[in-house]
Length: 200
Image 1 (cartoon, rainbow, N blue to C red):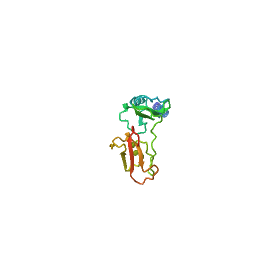
Image 2: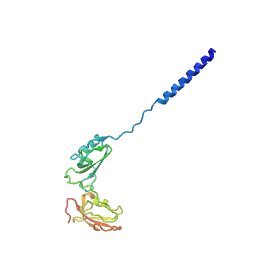
Image 3: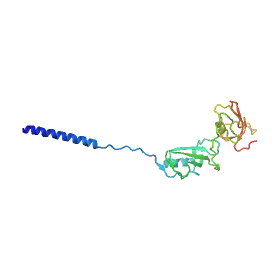
Image 4: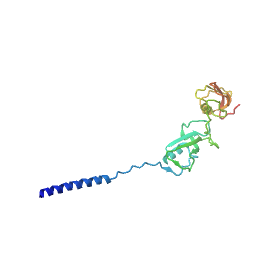
């Protein structure tokens, strides 16, 4: 009889221990994963008046990694050496709220040039059906405004017969076909001079 009592007691103890372990397992909690939020900066620094390279360095130092720039003169020039350009416009504007993953775009001109009153980055509306107005634009911007398969002839009409190497240095004085003409694959003829010269 004592042996039976001991066996029953041992069995009861085993059941109690197992239940306790199961209860502890069920009540244990795993740490919850939280989704990181994109930090928001209360205000964007003012980069206007800075050199382009300095503006880019400061923007990156304050957390803005996505940067772009464009020629505010409207000539479509590339910023090959950032230290030769200065900031005239910025987007988003200074003191506006911006997320750190936003793209900061700098409107620039060369160091020796005066900032224009308005940013000249407004792109010409490209149309594959009608001839856009190209007079006054740089040859580079004019070419970009035409369909990619257009045949374009550009001629220096200063009387000097110069070859055209850097198209952003030349402005369109005349065009054929005229603005609004339906485009049907016909060649485009442009008369150009350099930007520091007067159209004849």
